[in-house]
Length: 368
Length: 88
Image (cartoon, rainbow over all chains, first blue to last red; front, side, top):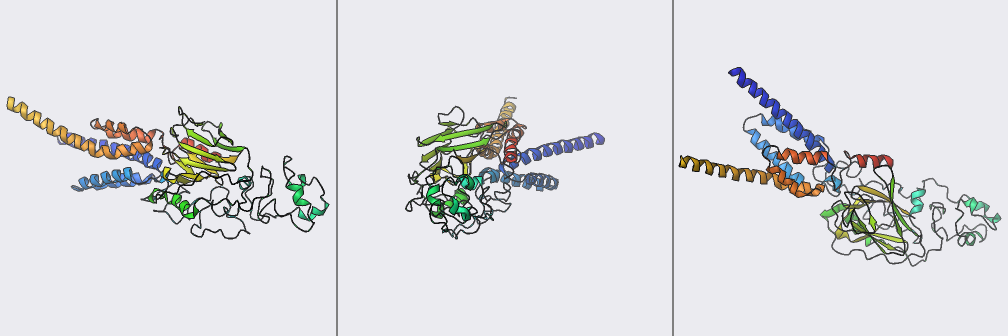
């Protein structure tokens, strides 16, 4: 009789152990998908199980675990970006620390070097670490960001290599400057013909540190001095994006980008390496000003057959030389260079951005 | 005997009420978790299954791909994309 009861006890313990292990395993996977370290589940589960063996403490443990379940349901998850309680975080996005370090942990958005040399400190002291900003004011308006993507301006780039040979270039200097054949000569010879000693002033805008002009796939019309691409609504709004929903921006959504640019390429492409290895490319052609991004079965202009893309998901606003992005309250979310974009942010300029995430898919933004 | 049956019925009713309260306590967070993961929040109703319901909901959350996107550590799609992008 006693052996039977002890066997039942052992069996019950074994049964509960199996259930606890199963629960820990599934909780591990769930919180990991939300962006928390999975071992939290192990700690909570094992700790709760051991403490639960103590009489009367078991009830408390269950209360605490229920509280944690509620907390998990209502706090911001690391995968959603923004301020995350309880630490954790996507590696590289929120580096383990609870709360947001003042933008120090933001990933240097893939290829934006910290503006090698030369650049005067950007006029936005309130946001030191935000990657896309520093180069912003200096960008000549007419130039798309491709130059930084294709040639991520190495710090030690010797700027004007070819210039000493300038006197001898009456014509056709383009190839030697590494320019593509299609480079319109309007800016080229105009810039090279001046007196030998003077480096060509305007066509390249920012001579010392600028990447070579070749990546600019557009006619190098001298940037109109007045058309500075006014950084969208100042630095505070950008900081709002970083801080996430805890600081919802009070109005002031950026107006649709004004056609400030002198020239532009034909359009934009958003490409992502698809799950099956086949790249998925969205093409935006200028001429049409608004593109609606939606998922499968949606009535958008850009259909992304992916479950995490909402119907509708986001809206892209095209203006000559500029591109704006607006989230439409999608479940999967939208992010610009890792920063969550919310519907309350209105339209954000993504002309200088590199990565745009729709739902679970991250797209690389490039000039077509 | 009729009294006995009435008592049983009232016990059953009381048990049912407590069972519903217990399910509701667990269902509230699951409702929001499912919604944020991109699932239909009505999957919470699986919690009504006595004993196993919560495990079923947890299994759904743990072993299927979240429509709203995952953190990426367990997602094969994201892992692949990270590889393709050269590690971000």
